[in-house]
Amino acid sequence: MARDWHNWARTASASPTDVIAATDPRQISEVIVRAAQAGRTVRMVGSGHSFTTTAVANDIMITPGSLTGVRSVDAAAGRITVEAGIDLTTLCEVLDANGLALTNMGDVRVQTMAGALQTGTHGSGRASGTFAEMVTELEIVLADGSIVTVNAQNDPDLFNSARVGLGAFGIVTAITLAVEPKFRLHAHEFPATIEEVQQNFDAWTASHDHVEFYWFPHTDKCLVKHNDRTYDEAAPPGKFANWWEERFIANTVFGAMCRLGRAAPGYIPLLNKTAGRVLSDRDYIDDSWLVFTSPRNVKFKEMEYSLPRGSLMPALTRVRKLIADRHWRISFPVEVRSVPGDSAWLSPATERDTGYLAFHAFDRTDDEWFVDVENVLREYNGRPHWGKMHTRSHADLAAAYPRWDDVLAVRDRVDPHRVFANDYTRTVLGE
Image (cartoon, rainbow, N blue to C red; front, side):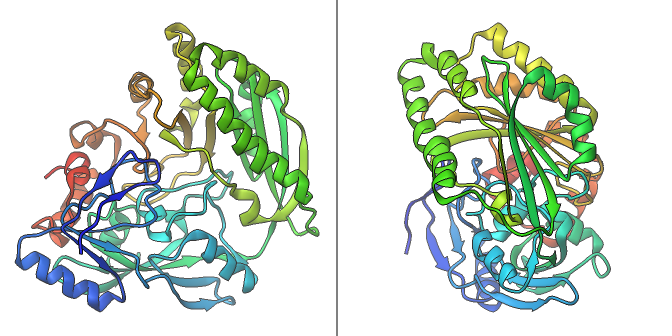
């Protein structure tokens, strides 16, 4: 039965011909074989939290259905195998119950594991890499219907292509992750000026496990976050403090400010200055997954770019000047993070230590300024986050990825007739 679909941010929509709830790999295999014989295409969606059209399926759409379970947990070996549709919150709860944790996370936990992996989700870290680096094995249903388990030993080319694969190499049905004993994070959040942050960012990232900051456009104010591993007893923020900071201030009040800014853009600099003045110092200790992530109730659109680590601050300086020169009115903070390089061939962090700049626009507001910022970031050999908005195509992406030709060769091998293609994969990977 067909039904209309849209993503969380309503920046992408689809009207699939057929919608099929997944039950197990064998059922998916049968769907793919029939689709291939009929010259049709198949895509699997997750939570719809990507801002691009990467998940759009206008022919056969497979939803996670009941493919959301935990296959096995081996605490001694530090391994967990989960099905593709499990959401990150449930995954973290299962790990926690077994005395385990993910090494790193982004700041949102509503995605499915496969969706987060396929688009290149990352967090921040001195030594902790992206989700792709935690993956030790993938179960994938290929275009010929075969159900294969790939790793770095038995098919390294497919493994390195499909870990961040945009759904273009097959339907991922299960993922094995390297995990570690449960740990806590000591979180220190504090205000600083942009000049202080840019001067100290390298030193901070060398001495703290996880560092990120948010710069408030039209001001010199930033909110800095240092997260360091600890096995001390938990000392989480009180219920009221947590509600005040994360629910009320970060979502309710911020949402109201964004709506006011949309109605009267001239007030945005004043609103940002006001927000910058009320930033406060905060210290607490909690389980890692509760510190890494936070709720996102204000809808927005996002573009994020990875840059060579050494280009991060010069690029940010250029963007700050561009915002001032163009007199744009930007209500959302700019988010800045860094991670070590990884080995997945289509990861935006592949083969280089990486800095990330993330830009946001409030729901239903103008995001045309993204393109001008993107043009600056291209000059620094920037690579777009696959799940965030961008205008790039295969014609200009190839030079940014050292194993691009190898990726395309793997795609030709496992999906020569493009059973898993959609408009997005055709744009970024070619026909």
